[in-house]
Length: 307
Image (cartoon, rainbow, N blue to C red; front, side, top):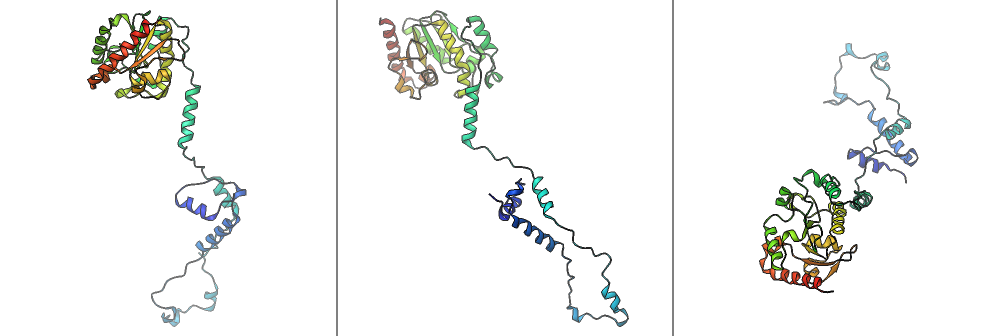
């Protein structure tokens, strides 16, 4: 594909230098440049306010024939122009980097996520697992955290409760469910004959996202191995997931929470029954849905009671 004069003119007008191969340059460009150079270097005629025929020249100052034939000493011939100089201009032009398309950026990000090597913690006991989470720098959230929120409770509990991501009060104290939503969760557990020390509490993320935003895919993926190992170590009889983000992440689904609650689920890696309900923080905003969470808790009790 050859490069036309019009294309080079457009790019030059926009201030964009372009490198092209000599073999792809249209030869007409060189003819055009040669003509343009000859015109630009042609001696300019002097402009008169009067026509040349009306200018009066004194007789004693009239130029002689010899003077008319002698060219001025300062006049020089136009500089020579060759196609080689144009080739040099093209060869020395700086190549322009084209911006990446949205699809190419998404593909590169996906490839980066898939090839990222996370900490192998499948054989960790509680102490090395806690240390790995404390020292973790697998995503950018470690730069902004106050404390990691590892989890707490009975390490052999029958109930394991998994929430979304730490909030501000949890980040401050380094403990899960420590704000007003934690008080409501304690009341919910009391209603079914349990208390906080009898269950194990954890979150899908161990660090708080800024401004309590939803976790990014890279962040959830970086923390999943830690949560998975916690589930393996606790080996609960039932997992109660509270919140949309935790439910969609652990169950690998995009269904809304309203459609996930009210029925039994299983996590692919574990043979453990799972019940989904609203996060206590959501119930504080919409208290009228508390009765739905009570129904979910009764479903969880029935699953534990069944053989």
